[in-house]
Length: 152
Image (cartoon, rainbow, N blue to C red):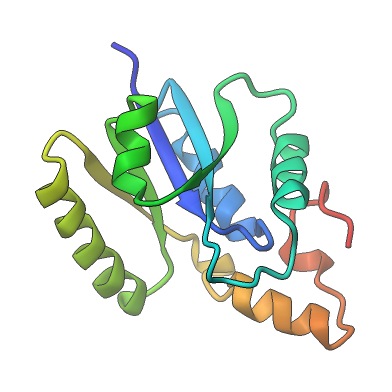
């Protein structure tokens, strides 16, 4: 059986937290599609192409990882790529509350798709793309929060 998951997000930028979730999930799935969501109403700090190239560089030697863009509902993208799992990382109880509601709505929309939650490792649970972008905007060094392949 081919177990395919999508890991959706904006990944602006792709942090060590994101990488940890993907890396720890590799043994669970045959294929993980890192799905960069396109939201035309959001003004992203990094271009979609930059984000895609960073992630492709990080996983260049891993045939189990694919990177794609998508627009619209995540659950519709799952159907399009025939993925039966949505992978999500949880840093804290606030993430859980938010993600739980989304997963339940997704289950209503498509009962065939399961959401799998991976708890973030404690040593990196404080990292968020929002905080990283703020540090970047203010001229700070973010290298300790990003995979080494991302050189900002």
